[in-house]
Length: 434
Image 1 (cartoon, one colour):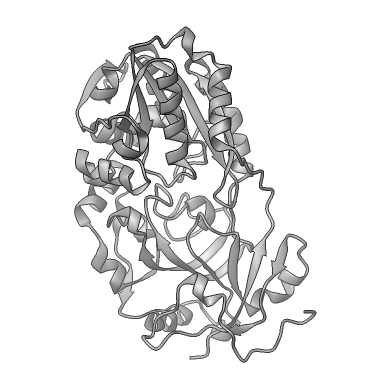
Image 2: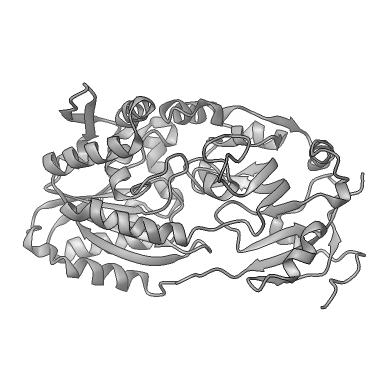
């Protein structure tokens, strides 16, 4: 089978970048004058989630240092719902993978799946909260604000969701996701967020926003009563700064890796255009991707393959790495059971490319619209097939980095890693105009 020729492009996004992350965290916290609330000798629980947030270790460590500067006694609590296989040890391991340990942070990490019930809704839904966090004199909520992978609204993923899913642990996350089936995410997140702030000692939050290159763009410290109002404003910025694929119509999207450190859904549905349907873009959604081929899992996902069910093709090597307990726990808790469905899988990339390119209709393989990315967080540079060349040459926001060269597998019949392929030199004709 003849594969399409490929060329690499760089996307030029609107990408504000924060260069002094610790300084920004300190400055933002100082604006709130936390010493008015937090007194020497008091304990402060600081949340740490399971996402691969840019500079998360630096952000958490700086919050710890600022609490110590007040004379307080900080400790970190994992706030990640059912992730890590729904175990205290698994969640501690996830944090260690991000460089968040007792040694690096200079404070204890109190990891437990134990929760307390702090309220009940009018429709009988119990509201849970991390027991270790509940015992602190104060709680500081830290999280990235970004569009959610499954819900649309003024408030999506951020501080409010961290109080809901993260600090609800496995028990709370399971209840809330089930409730969302009958009620709206917006209703549940506001309702639980209100009760948590009324019943628990939430001092303030530290929100981080990222630019399309997966870099820290903004830090904002928010007083607890203002979470809802300010998070709405931050969500507008976060959506503007979301990474995206360079073209709206794609026959085959190749993704080197997925994982919970990349997105709650393994691969970000906002990037692949499958927020409302696992296998196609719905009306109004872009991009419109016909087939997805996922090559591997990230190391930091620890075998959690949540999201693989949104791909049409994958490799046996990925399937062999799946921790089914962690994956099933996650997707059942999140009420997205199809996200764990294992797609067609083959021994080699070459086998998959042949089947995938035969499954895109009447388009000849060499004319297929193919995009290749490392993961859905990292789309600053993209490999694109020759079918996009004319479009790319007309776009001011796209920079063509290489000549056309063949899409070729290695001697083991697998593609090289995305970064290694950049240096591939083929026999294709140079890009016109270069």
